[in-house]
Length: 409
View: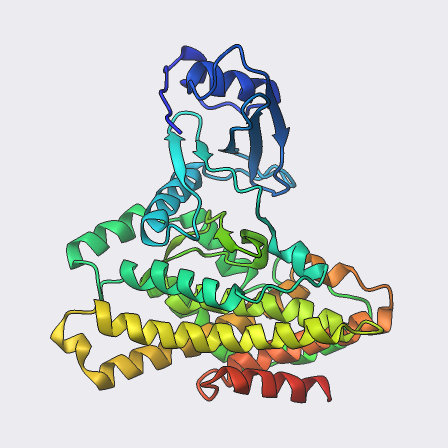
């Protein structure tokens, strides 16, 4: 799809577009559709920091997505830099080059309107809601492990020229979005200093004992936080949960990398793993539980870990050229560290989604209060174990074994 911007004066300064503005924008500014065509514009986003529209030509069926950044959060009105939209356009463009099967195509980014024009992926469905409906995707572990390896390893200076990588680190500095993660993921769940944590009635004492007063755990989280803030290892998505993965039985697309920056490889891997635990744990609390879905979900956790690790090692051998880095002992130490990080970050993600103010949908769907308490405690215990035992767990089978042991306690 060809974009031919007209640079009309109306669109030279940022303003928040509504549906009628978007219709005019795609016709008279971008020249994506002829003026005499009937266009349907629908707002399809449900997020807090962007506005997303699908524009469809009713005659030809052609469609495009327009995603515009706002200067204020929808929920609170808090100011937020719109440069995150430029970062998102840049990372999607680069990742589409690295992993075209798994990343939508970017057609254009408007630096005045902070509007991203991209491929419509409406043939794919939000994975979070698909898992809530207990849909099974046999190819998921194969596809997401491909995506992780293809988008992470090539952005490191194990592969990139040093000067290129340093410029990339500079270009993807994402101060405000990183600050959100540093607070919501690594600080507030263990020290509710802003008073924003949301605890289920009956779990206050459990959370205080296991999180607020757990000094050994907080020590490990401090190391994970420090690593997140200082290890500019690879260009990471930064918010890679199942709500950012759109999927069907033929493939998947990863979207919404507004939190992207140069950080530890394990953070993205850990986020994928963490969000597979939520539907698993929820299913356990339901009567009757869905045994087929439970088995597939546990297998997916195991396979995502094992396949990502195996593919990383293979890609490392193929892509890393520096003789020092080809040293087998260095390579093994690097792999051990990356996947220990992944488990630690899976743990922090589980915990923050349970006690923080940014919940996942799965945690709001149980009608039984006692079941809700058991669900949250299981997820917190799982998160703690992943953090504290992250250097001891080295296989997907161990992940499943430990989870099965915890659910019996």
